[in-house]
Length: 236
Image 1 (cartoon, rainbow, N blue to C red):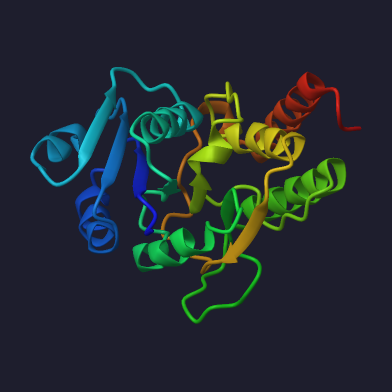
Image 2 (image 1 turned 120 degrees about the horizontal axis):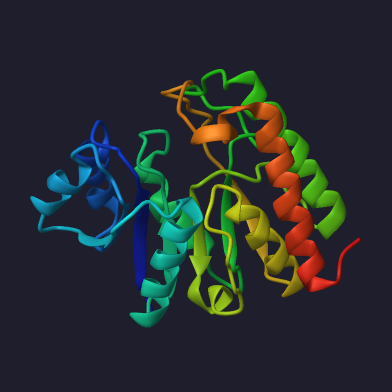
């Protein structure tokens, strides 16, 4: 029986990309959910004009993790088998959605995009600090959790809702994926990395406030990782 899957996009102030990205996503996913995390730039108005996607709006900006959690709960409540997450900044290729859905079978709980498994013709040079932080955190996660991970922060993923039901995610910000990896390891979820191109369209994209400082952002990631591990009392 074919999987019933939902593709979801967390969105915050993406008026520049949202319609173009959604038009492409709809070609590869019949059911699409957009979680608008309190956009103030006209994104909400563009979404209101569409009748081909489901839209959930947060009245105020609650964070990347909060938007994903809303999507996860929706997918579980509406009996989807699989939920695909894709960012709305044009840096992911929607034509790869079917690959992720197909890979999320046979007991696989998380198919996680990795920009460092394979070289693609469309690869671009990433901002040096972002790549360095990602590699540092990915290596630490792999060492401390006993899983093999090359790209801790790629937003292109597919999840089985059976796996998601085992998680209790509470981190609302950009570091939510760290909590997710800790809980995935704790529950021994089956994780597969899937190669995707390394595409950066906006090197100046903001993380928001103090997190735009690389050192502060790395300290924040360590804090969330340590806090998430401490809750499980399972890892060193």
